[in-house]
Length: 511
Image (cartoon, rainbow, N blue to C red):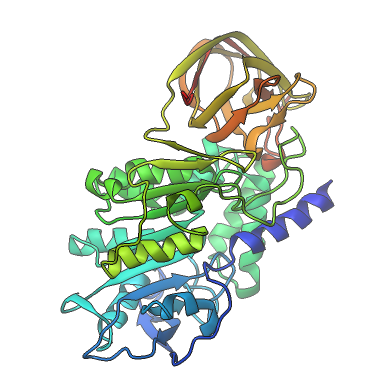
């Protein structure tokens, strides 16, 4: 099983970090320029760090006929795109493109500080300064280019650190539109929900950084210490705390530019809830009314074997039932039209602004909802699980037909008898508890340190989902003492967890 998981990790990481690009095509008349800009030293050092790029200038772009610019960067462990064919869909549409190697990767120097606003935030600002200095790039005002951005995973993270750090440093961002995919709201929530590491992903991301020594030694040490002890050292939390939109939101900052979000509902590194939180919390109300959220089955996806998930194989093809309903033939095409609307002022026929559009687990239907908050409550009574060892248990919740789209939560009174009690919760669907499969391969931990007697727990997060429960099948709450996404990070001591007066709050979609 470990060999299967290791293979799946490598495959999923390669798929998830593929650059956001169009189909290969001729890019007639495009001029490319390679170079580097000097950015801030790594913390604790004094030598400036080079950030290297490839600039794509479309045919006909001149000082008298300037064009808007789109930034691109790679996923974790990757490097910039240099092939003109990769961006032909953008350059043919009249956009310039700049793809750059993030700090610690490709030809760029330094260590990756995982989108720290003081480090990678400064790198992105230097890149925007470079773009603003090009005479053939359209400007809103001197030094302020007409600017969009694309990229997935780590290539979505740079968009947020760039835009938010500009707000922090300048009071406003020079980005005019963003198109981030499968990225995070909070790194600590994503990598260590309730302090429980996602073992397979932490291992994969560390391994992907080793060829270029991208990570600072302290971070590699932190992951190793977490693996050895089952607990995340405080200094690793401190290192990651500011590296995402959640920290900026805590500081009172919001983005006031339109954003097209793409997020994987089957993503078990940066799950669906991370995108939903970005949409609901990281934008101003005005920006949200001009933005679109698309959830699809894809992203950083590993198979769920224990407990069994709805897709045991890594899905190499994303299933997206929503982009076509919103005005794009695919998410890439939707992104192009979104940029044309916001950077070129074109009428593109897009729809669905200000709402969430989620592809169901079966991949054949798009559910559009104005909110992903729970709307219906179901009393389950008592839920019991062993911790540390044992089998998953599925508790029936409701009969199909039923549609759920959003972020469920759970209330309960918790009793535990172990030292560090960890169980894993998720929704599942089947004809009976024996064949119930975890929806979209996601579970989240519930953790309680020490002995507790009827301790109230409110608003415990369950994985966000989009699913149709068909007639003849049942929606279950699955509780498990272990989960493949956190191999080795269940309770280290066998014990038990009992939840009384359990109430499950579900985002039910009414027909």
